[in-house]
Image (cartoon, rainbow, N blue to C red; front, top):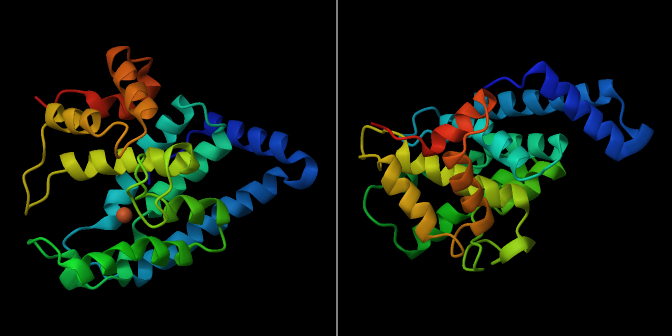
Length: 232
Ligand SMILES: [Fe+2]
């Protein structure tokens, strides 16, 4: 997992304390994060590592971009952190989907597609003790136009974290090189995000990415800005 730097961690603690008053202490925040980390490690230990599509590494890769994009979108640091953790485990429910379906190269038939879609509920169940995360995991396949699943949520009724993960995870799925598929170029992936802005993706977040790609802010934004950097 990419590391949260110390300053950011302090900021997160500060934000959580501010929004929760005296109810949450620094040590409780640490306990919360450690519990979450343990939970994720426990789940990962039980996972079948032989899936061709490695949804664990896919989640790890989008932790940092999701964290940074959340902050860029104006989330307080504590919310940004929850979004990033949710990104890490968003597809963890795929562990309960049959390998035949996950590894199938040809298009899925209806009942297979239904089974695959259940991964959002399986994932929600994995992290039910962390309600901040389970809600985001459950809705990461909703579409901005209301045509996604599981609840056909629309526009801003979709949790912001889920809207952000929809973009970061799609970017990773499009551009990451796998031995069984040819990745899209950066330009092709950018076009895909743009074409589906307002349909699948929140157009404001797609636009935010475009602006930041044009005007990179600082070296701290490296991993986010790399989303739009040329591959060549
Ligand atoms: Fe998913």
